[in-house]
Length: 83
Image (cartoon, rainbow, N blue to C red; front, side, top):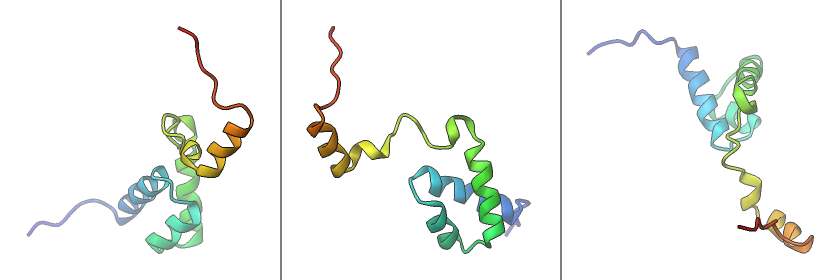
C-alpha cells in the first residue's frame, strides 16, 4: 500500500470546486465537506477568482429553471437570429 503526498487541504479545495461548479451553493458545499467557515470562505474566494467568475458560462443553470423559462416566454420569448 502506498501513501499519497497530497495535502488534505488540496483535496478539499478540489472537491469544493467540483461541488460549486456543479451548482451546489457555497453553504451546501461547506456542509457536505464539513469545512470550518474560514476554510470554506477561503475556498469560495479562490473559486470566484477563477476565469469567468468560477461558473461555466456555457452552462447557464437559470435557463433550465421552469419559473425563469415561463417568465421569459411571458415577456416575448427568447430572441431568434435570422440566417
